[in-house]
Image (tube, rainbow, N blue to C red):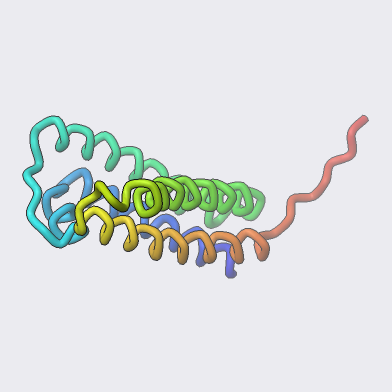
Length: 138
């Protein structure tokens, strides 16, 4: 049950951000950075590709829910994704704190919090996920 909820959490986060990046990146960026930033056509195109990627990951997370043997690997993917996002945000907070704008640092801190929660949810879901039966090798 915990692993199913953790997969649903990962799927919900990815689908929400995927939709926003795909359909309305300026709304997401304005709210995340707490300031208005012009979304150029190039940035909008990059956001659409990223949104499509997030929607694909959301499909995978949600698709794994009924398959007990895939829940552990799906949550491992969720942990890797959260760690990657936290590394990128952490780099901005630590290494670029002198050159980044206040809005960029605030966005990085929001990412660290959200992905930290997602990492914890994924970790506990992974620990609770059903273990696959070991097959005998002949």
